[in-house]
Image (cartoon, rainbow, N blue to C red; front, side):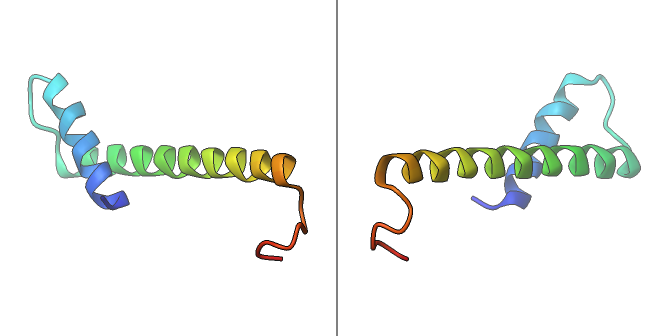
Length: 65
């Protein structure tokens, strides 16, 4: 699953909420919002697990350092 396919799926779901089809400009704007949100979510989750792994296993424990 790619960022683009996730974004397109989310935009499609958002579009279903409205009674009319979104214009190309609206679709582009919504796509950018969704894409930025997904990137922030992935970055946040990644940081959380890297921090947790560092706390659990310690930095420089020999694995990958």
